[in-house]
Length: 115
Image 1 (cartoon, rainbow, N blue to C red):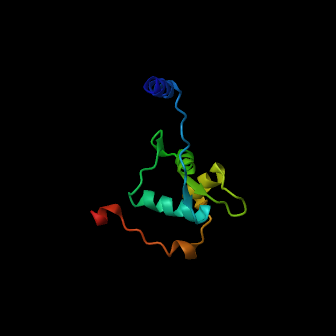
Image 2 (cartoon, rainbow, N blue to C red):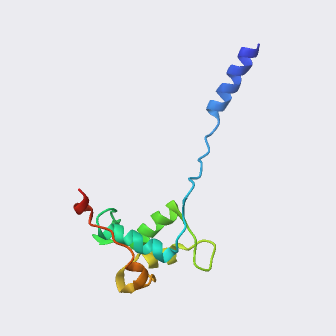
Image 3 (cartoon, rainbow, N blue to C red):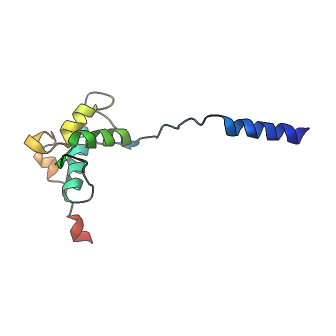
């Protein structure tokens, strides 16, 4: 009697729909500007491949992927927005707000120099 009850429970569990576990994000302790600058440097040095759209770098898609993976606190807000992250990840027209003094503190070699 006990074994048949156990088998019945196991069959019910197998037939239950599995719920997706929400992936926990990696916590970023720096600012969105620091995140954007560092990750663009990693792209520029060959460590990370930027998503492309029609052969051009797709900063919006890159920001979405980063936003889905990292928990990034905003400057005055609890969390940054995808729009702000897109701005900080875009090196065109000096959209990243990290100061030149702070940028100078990073030295990342080309990936090819490390192979």
